[in-house]
Image (cartoon, rainbow, N blue to C red):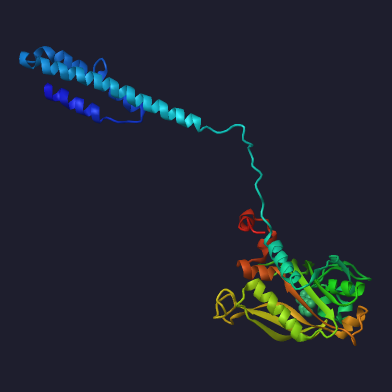
Length: 341
Ligand code: DAH
């Protein structure tokens, strides 16, 4: 008997719980009307006389400790409930905190291109997205039978006289040259349209930035140095450029520019198709015919021009491999640009 009482006393001292149900079960087990303490008291009269005193003390001790323990554990629970109720929601808080959106990656890159050219004295000019044939093609030295004028490439709005969605931002060059006198140093960012089937690599609308510099004595060396500056600002100081001869009706000579692949540092990877270089823009010296078409004396002035696709630069900067992502409004895609300005 005494052993059993001492066991229960130890059990009571050791008992801990934060669960109200468990505490109540413990109380019933020890102090309940059919509990252990009751049973032990019932046995009291069978305890030998010489042990009665000690047994009585242990039983009283057990009752006191059990009652104290249960009270203590219950108080702890009540206390922690009190704490959580203090942590309750602040109902006066505004429900929907205004969630900030993100800038579109095309805007981010376009703005960065503008900032880079602004640092070397280029202004920003804009032109209409619906253009006439003169500004989009004829003034830029496109022969009448040039395939770029074809229905396949151009979205026509009206025929005879031809009005179309501009197919490139080179049309803004023409407007700027018609309306201002050299020196001209400007870039023209904007949206352009081509009649292409939409896929990961082609879209019916995209963005370009056109550059134009006209002054006395502007040379191909100026073009090269300007583009090198741009490439290194945009892709990092270690970037190399490479100019390959090309053809555009509005420039002579013409070139395409590649930058060393920033993904493999020029060593060769599947993005640059193991060439170490990526094509990013077309450029050249403005054809004297174009200068004359726009009222600029080609015997006095020379100039260079270049045109780049914003999507292409964005693809390289942010590793976006599907052009369609730019216009799908996929929140998960756009959220990745949060915090960029
Ligand atoms: N307009 C050309 C295109 O859309 C890009 C371009 C190439 C612009 C050479 C230029 C240039 O100003 O000099 O493909």
